[in-house]
Length: 447
Picture 1 (cartoon, one colour):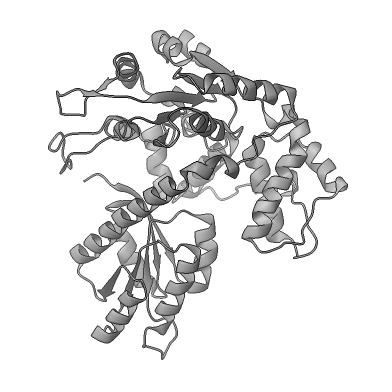
Picture 2: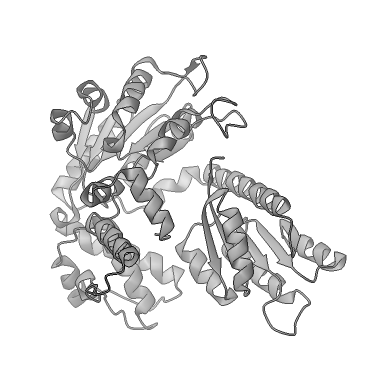
């Protein structure tokens, strides 16, 4: 059975409960996280996207009335009002269950639970969560451009923005080139918002995060019975973008056999699900992005030449942050305001000395690294004084002296991911592994 892409959070002070629930649910969902202390919930959720929460109702010894669970459920709902929460207790009563459901719980599980019932409840919660998020996206679709700082004082970036203004109104394919963290996703979404397809779906597909055996089924969908585990018809992500825009990120990671299928799709605007001969007409606009040198990939026969020429009708090179010195101050102010609000520290400011520190750093991780730098600094600062934690100020990487093979393997994987700033393909190549093998090891070490 293919795992559903979802993040489940389990909160319980009993380590045995956490272990057994995680082992069972990990069979069906890609990410299952556990917390033993309820006070860690809000911090965890502020840093992670969660699709459903499985929450114990009793955390204090001697208190078995379920009020702890009801309290923390309300705390979660202040942060994520639409997030499905499943409450569980070993001391279930009808009155308590009714009270929990009235207060917004999506379901109620008694311990010890029936595994099938637990799966069914969590699976339904995930489906509800996805529908809620989709509704939120549609409700907020007209205000998306305000989420980002798109003004620029950099001549190189202004030229890019001018080109975007010209190409957005057309249906031409756009190829965004640039290092990791330069804002390719933001610019792709901006192109969509300026186009006539605004108000229609914008579907982001990160090809770098998909394991190779999931590429085709996720992109093109499948027919019920097409393979083991295909228990229903499934529309792929490209089909779900009908009348809107498909943003194929990390296009350089697409395997050669799928490059042929994508080329056919772009040329003919027809799509067939796996196991299906029926062709479906497709009306979408394509935007592509990569940090790879595609011309080099073409020369090395890793990327089809005809596909390369098809996707780069308009090719835009996004400058790195070190080439946009004029924008560092305004971007830092934007992120500071964002995190002042998030972490309730309105008194923090960036003075000239701190801005000078920011401008004297090379920012190999670009805007994303600046974003993380400001967030870390806000978190670690007092409420009145901003303490700027620059990347070079962080604790140096420890030298490994333990020769335990498993620990060394985890260390090397972390080092490769850090070196290539999260690019799975480059990290896998550096380690001498396939992407699928690296994903398996990342799952093993919960990275």
